[in-house]
Amino acid sequence: MTMAAKKGKSMPSSQVTVRRAGAQVGAFIENVDLSRPLADADFAIIRQALAEHCVIFFRDQELSEEQHIALANRFGRININRFFTPVPGYPQIAEVRKEPHQRSNIGSIWHTDHSYDVNPALGSVLYARIVPEIGGDTIFANMGAVFDSLSPGLQQTLQGLRALHSTRHVFGKDRPKTPGEDREGRIGNVELAVQDTVHPVVIRHPDSGRKILYVNPDFTVGIEGWLPGESKALLDYLYAQAQRPDFQYRFQWKKGSLAFWDNRASWHYALNDYHGHRRLMHRITIEGVPLTAA
Ligand code: SIN
Image (cartoon, rainbow, N blue to C red; front, top):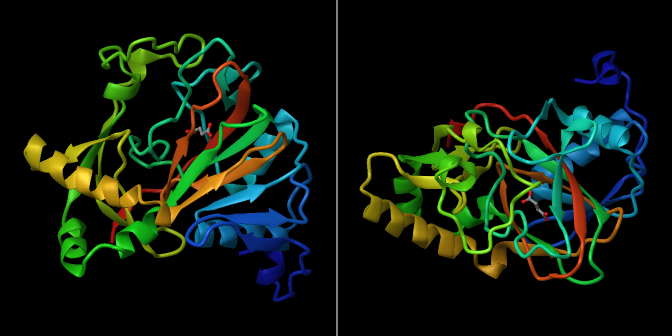
């Protein structure tokens, strides 16, 4: 509760506006300068929009590293990513970088950040510093809407299940290598990729209360107590459903754009269609809370 609310005073009104981006996911937040500390009334609107729309977008922001950190800190404690190369001098900020000579990018598989953690991240705040003239969009999907689209019978089955999530096959030293992999300077600390954890397949979102399908193709490795073939068949079905364009919004970046997504409620996918061009994003991830079954 804010100080104003505690004292029974009404909050000053806010100029901030929320405009839906896609039918199922995403909203643009306008009339706000993120380089300045957020007033309580603005903060309340932005937090509510994040819970409602899963990902929120801001345009034309000019942020120093310090201002980016201050913004993230307003929403929670920063999680220092253990695998991404940090921005020099700012361990709280992970670089999401692709250079013109590199073929692979970070994030071109559907995923939600940090599902491998015991308390997965609340969200990520990604700020565009250098973007290609065309390409390098990010697609977001609403995983609450995906769950709602399933039959009551399948929903009930899923609500009794738990899934295993891991870092080993993505960041670990024994992970399967893809031809032409060029992670040097971008991803490291392979020895720290030993984290496995189990989460309910359907979680109750801690803020919105919505039921969310909480498995993803990058970090989920199976359904607890099921044979690998059984897990694969179920997960493949769910992933095909979740990848339907009906649940998505595709965001086109510009320099100074910022996207803030809720990792519990959404998936995202970074397109890798801009070879020969540079893309440099700064990402801060915010700590989350333990997840509970729906
Ligand atoms: C990520 O997956 O965190 C990065 C997304 C992007 O670069 O658009």
